[in-house]
Image (cartoon, rainbow, N blue to C red; front, side, top):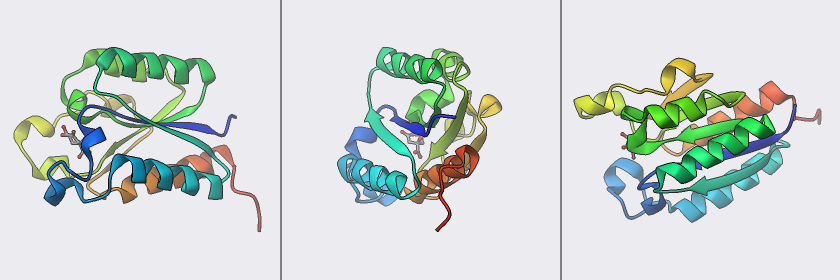
Length: 149
Ligand code: DQA
């Protein structure tokens, strides 16, 4: 099984650090990406972090992951709640974990439903940016990339 992991972030997540810091924290997307690549290296994973505000681009990345047969860590932002096109693309990947920085269930009603959860291998919600680290740790355990020390 490939040790490549695509961490795919959807709309408005490129504004991490500036966007509602009380909800999403002060870390920028660039800092999150650098941190996850480093964490991935420690876990024996080749992590690539991408962000887009364009639905077509995200669908293309999910197709790429499907063709590679790699794991996806997906925070689809608001698309989570209504985009069946993103859900159909995610369903083609070998495995994906759904991540949300905030606890969507403690927020507005429209955030309570996800069109992605039914086919996700797992869902990490409300753990802050640490949810991404936990997702990578899970992937590492699944692909067996952690070497004995
Ligand atoms: C989010 C939650 C979504 O409801 C929201 O639209 C986002 C971010 C999260 O990470 O908590 O953009 O996915």
